[in-house]
Structure formats: structure tokens, C-alpha cells
Image 1: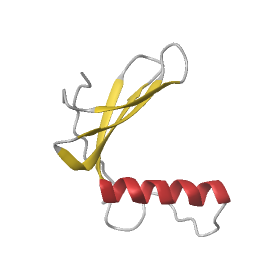
Image 2: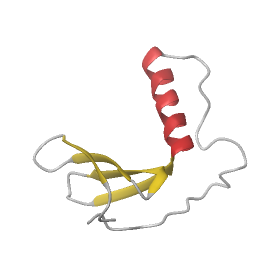
Image 3: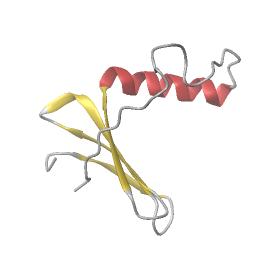
Length: 88
């Protein structure tokens, strides 16, 4: 995790968002969030997933009308799979 460098945006005195990359892992992005309670959450996503996220964000911004419900279809099986890692 020490090789991850990126950009940090502080939303207020507690909350923040971080987006970074590790040169040894060129196909993943590291997203970090800190909420009002000071709890850190780290999400590691593939380059393809990050690209899809950016396209989805654009669709929300332009108000695209082809929205679907969430969770969508039988793939989710109505449960979450969570992996917790601390942000250093």
C-alpha cells in the first residue's frame, strides 16, 4: 500500500475522498473515503470497472432515462460480499 499515490479532496474537517494508483499494479485504482464518524473505507477497482463508473457518472449527469433498479437481476443474490481493509 505504500506505493499508492494519488489525489485527496477534503470535503470538510472530517470527510475526505482519495483516488490513487500503484505503479506496480497498473490495472487497478484505489478509492478511499472517510465519513463523518471518521471511519475509513477503501475500495480497490479494476481499470475496466473504474472506466465503467466514469461512464455511469456521466449518464447520471445528463439524466439518461434508461435507469434500472438496484440490486439488478439475480446476479446480486440479495446479499453483499464485503472485504475490509484499513487505509494506511
